[in-house]
Image (cartoon, rainbow, N blue to C red; front, top):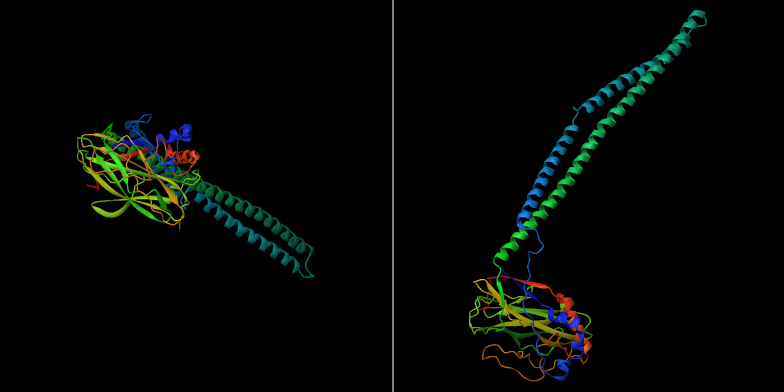
Length: 436
């Protein structure tokens, strides 16, 4: 189930038309009652411009096929490398043969060199009585042996070169096979990434389609109201305050599920620096005293159901970190509903309640509580408190205790940046946890 709220339209208006704020009287400075911010839930198509599920299925199938082929190619490359590392390949055999020839050539060279040594020794050992013919024969033997040694040396060099050439060929073949494995691994990795992305896109599209199949028919219901009571006008940094959020079904029909919405925004005194990370909202229900943090979409668990004319009080807690500077804050509240028949909607008003942030260590002062906005819910047991209390903000964002309209504009602008003007907060149908 999908229901979407554009949270910051009013805030964006404060940025686009600052003259409205500049001409506004600060709400807390002169104690005048401002009007409240109004925001109507809107819906946007989640399928426009996106590929269809059929197209994504084809893409996923194609990516799977490419991945399967990549795995096969990598397996084949690994097997080829393994085979080439053996001693039975033609090039490995050629290396062995060349090494054998080189070994024989080396032996022949060694023998030839020894023959030279022996021939020279024989010539030297001739006695003085040796004839000229004997001396000539011995000298000729030395010459012949030296010639044979030269020939044997050349043969050995050629055989050694042949070994190097054979080994280079074998190693080049193995390197090429190893490179093929590396490339195949990269191809498999890329194919897996593409396959994963295609699978995720398909799964997301199917999930969105399932949500859209269960998408509700949005309708505005101004009689679903949300009002804060008990939030003081000043909160000291380093402390926490408890207050109450009352959600009221002022219509004449039961709302099967109601989801309360709450968001807090704060700035320093200048209004230029947001300090949202230093302020925190928690909630607890009547059925559980455990404090829970408002989720990242600013919703609390569903109230199931909320009968016609009934209300539910949600206990809220605002905590301001001790490191927070003195500044201004505003808490927004709203509510959405989802029915079993497929209808959904929400109150059109996004109400904001202001408070001041006093620096840590400030002396506590007695402050009044927040009051409901001028639009009352259809229930008789909500009373309006009076006095110098925090109140719902104006048509954009009201002043937060500063005497300058500039701080109003800065707070509104800061909220636009922090929330995101036009940011979409999706509410998915939940049936776990209720306040009822």
